[in-house]
Structure formats: structure tokens, C-alpha cells
Amino acid sequence: MGPLVDALLRELDGYVAGQTLEVETIFVGGGTPTMLPPEELGRLLDRLRALARPGAELEFTVEANPATVTPEIAKVLVSAGVNRVSIGAQSFDVAELAVLERGHRPVQVAETVAVCREAGLGCVNLDLIFAIPGQTLESWLASLEQAIGLQPEHLSCYSLTFEPGTRLYDQLQAGKVTRVDQDLDAAMYERTIDTLSDAGYVHYEISNFSRPGYRCRHNLVYWHNEPYLGIGPSAAGLVDGARYKNVAEVAGYTEAVLAGRGPRVEEERRSIEQRARETAMLELRLIEGIDRRRFERRYGQDPVDFFSEAVRRHCETGLLEVTDQRVRLTRAGLLLADTVVADFL
Image (tube, rainbow, N blue to C red):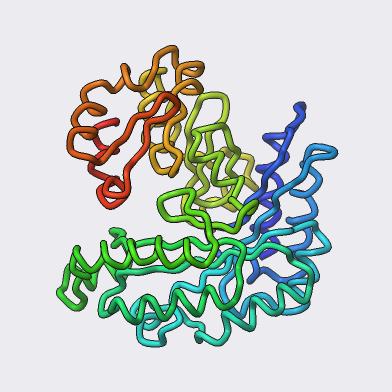
């Protein structure tokens, strides 16, 4: 793992050389960084922590799979200034975890949360997935209740997507698994909203819920389409108006960076119109929707006028609502967000 960390730090140093970054959020994930040896993980996190703006209330998140956060790893996280851990629980049902090919046992989620708490990590997120093949409404609600019982500050609840190139997608194509019925998928989502609201969580993004004061600031950067720096294999970023993506394979990434070559395999500069449409698409994911005044300051036009036909059509169908301040999805619109968003793009 040493060469990978060497490459990550070299790519990072290439970005920060000669300039001052005012970093306020850091998110280490897209894999399982807690599987790194403690000394390598600490080397990476310490370097990232040094980028923080002096005096900033840094939000520093690390992703982890259950059972990968030992007391030693938790100590490394705390020592480096990490204050938020995102744990990939996914489900508390053994059969559902098997469908997802997750190697942990449900009890290990609680054990991992306990280790994090004991080390002093003050914010825990749990990732959960619903609409898993074979899942019932009852089994989903049971997982949700077990997650709530662990008292996380944040919950991310995603409807399962079948991504091309994954084993689960291949199984779907081969008829070995079946998608959950759309009505059941919708029922699971609506019950999620109501259950978490009753438990004191604020629904602030289509799939994200938090205790008051614990919204994920890092993800809000994405949803407001603001600049962010991405480093590492398969990392994406938005810097100086250019959206880019790095080579996906770890070996290819490491070799390229350590050989002095750039790791980017895609790069695109968007026109103002493209950026405006992309921003609207992302901000519609937020429960508060698009701030009309903020959008107009950024792009020179009220979104109600910019997207007049899409706004009119979806207001008539009850999927959108417009106030003096905002354009946002209705409760019904949340269930059909992809359909609405497509018209804004």
C-alpha cells in the first residue's frame, strides 16, 4: 500500500504547489481507506489535515466498512483530526448482505460504531440500501430501526442501482436476481422519510437525513456544483471550471503518477449554459431545492425563466413547486426525481 499512498501524496503536492488552498472539508473514500496499514493511513491523513484553512471548523470524513475500524485504526483517525466516519452498513439482514456480496455480519456494524464512539469520533453516518432483490418492506424497516437504534448523527438511504460492470448487474441480466417492484421501492422510500422524521432526523437531500447541525458539508459542495479537488484512482474533481476524472485502476494510477505522468483520463470544460443546467439538476436533489436569487447571481437569469417549460410542466403535474425564493421538488416529485431532472438537463 506504500506506493499507492506515495502516488496520492505526489498528485496532491502537484495541485497545491505554488498556491494556497483554503480547505474546509475533506472526504476520504470511494473505497475502504481503513484497510490501509495504520502507518500508511496516518501518513495520508496527516498530510490531508495540513491543508485545512487555519481556524476553519474542518469537516474531515473517512469511509469505513464494518469491522475495518479497529481500536488502533480509530486512534489513527482521531490523531489525524478526523471527526466524521461514514460506515457502509447497507443492511442488517444476513440474506440481503449476501445478495450485495458484503462480507460483514450485521452485529459488526454496532461493534464498529462502538469503537468509533469510544475513540471520540463525534459524528457517525450509516449508509443503508433499500430495494435489494428479495427484500420486503418489513425487512427494510427492521434494518432502518436497527440503524436508528445505534443513534447515528447522519443516515444515507439509497435505492439500489444496478451499475453496468458489476456482478449484481450481470446477475440481473442473467435473470438470477429480480428488481424490486417499483411500487414497493416507492413505499420503502416514503416509509423511510416518515420513520426518520419521527426519529428526529431532518431530510435535507433526496437520500440523506441528519440530526440538526450534522448535514454533510462536503456533499453539499457537490450538490451546489461548487469546486472541489479529487485525487486518487477513479477520483473526479471540478477545478478552475474543468470537470475531470482520473484513471480507475489502482495499478495504472500509481504507475502514471510515480512516473510523472498526469492521471487524468477525462477532462471537460462546460459552457455557462451547461453549468447552469448541471447546477439546477444537482440542487434539485436538495429538499430546499434551487435558491432562485443565488442561481440568478451565478448565471444571470432566474431559474423559473431559464427552465420555463420544464418548470411549467412539472408544476402542472404536481412534481414541482415554486415559491418567491425557491424551485423544489414536491413529495410526489421526490419519487420521480430522475424524470424531472432530465428535463432540466
